[in-house]
Amino acid sequence: MTGPEAGTGHLETGPGELAADAVRRAAEQDRLEADSGRLVSPLADADERDIEGALRPKRLAELVGQARVREQLSLVLEGALRRGRAPDHVLLSGPPGLGKTTIAMIIAAELGAPLRITSGPAIERAGDLAAVLSTLSSGEVMFIDEIHRVARPAEEMLYLAMEDFRVDVMIGKGPGATAIPLEIAPFTLVGATTRAGLLPAPLRDRFGFTAHLDFYEPEELGIIIRRSAGLLGVELRDEGADEIAGRSRGTPRIANRLLRRVRDFAEVRGNGIITKDAARSALELYEVDESGLDRLDRAVLAALVRRFGGGPVGLSTLAVAVGEEAETVEVVAEPFLVRAGLMARTPRGRVATPAAWEHLGLVPPPDAGSQVRGQPEPDKLFG
Image (tube, rainbow, N blue to C red; front, side, top):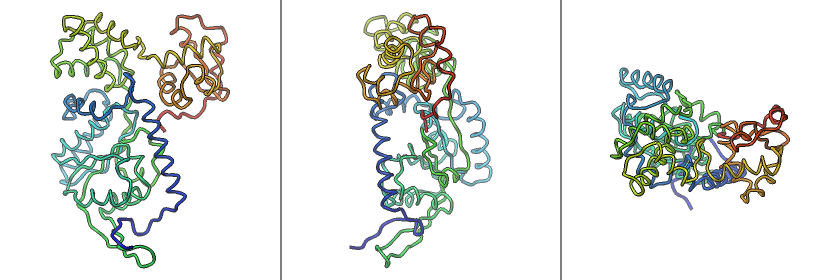
């Protein structure tokens, strides 16, 4: 059987590589599903993304936080506009919920260009990518979320498209296959990834501008929460905004989600005004404490401290103690506990820091600090 199949024409992917790629993509999907459904999850489902659309800033001047990225990106975009050419391809990396999709939309708005949105998991074959690329208009912005999850054959096609604005369409199969070059309009690719380490070097090197998004300070989150409250028509006191910001894990998506839950509480059980007391009562009801820890986070911390004396303890043993899968503990709970300085990963196992003991209202033992001074494991939080 013959038929058109898109490919790069000179790059080939073996069966072993395809199988490994499929395993990698399946593992990534499991990792994302494990963190869904939590109030403090930085991930968003389709419904929440629709809600977020109304709250997103539209221009760079409206973007709160990420000051260095804003300044660098404004230079890239302004330079491209003055030259009358498409800007370099842009790679945005960082943990979920920090605004990578928002920045992609802002880039298109600043350029006055259409925006085409897709995601890595949706591009399973080179033909899927060729169908999108061949319909791009000149200067259009193409946004690929979770670009590290693009299938390997499509990834190889992307190399040629980004560099030469061309794709090779393969007609037929086997020795008789013929590559027909297809020119595509100059475009700007904006890729977003939470795991930059999974991007192959040839793909990463084709981005002319790379930006890493950092977690937000509570003061910045407070500004975001006040802006969102205004758009939602919610009456919010400054101390109420500060209370929500302090429990939002440095992540705007979580801050906006907590704002909506506190709004529900204030409207149903109060007078509709979000005060500090209303925010505190609501978040206590939803089991989000002052540091942003939820039920699972506290269960892991309590098991580590109370059952195992602060560790070190192996991941599997810790998971059994809290009644969860080892992957759930490692992927869902550990990243924030490590970032918050409450847990450390060491070659001997997981160890509670003195701050963890204090968070639980306990006095840390004299040797608590020495337990975490070993060589840490490589950071697996975001690739």
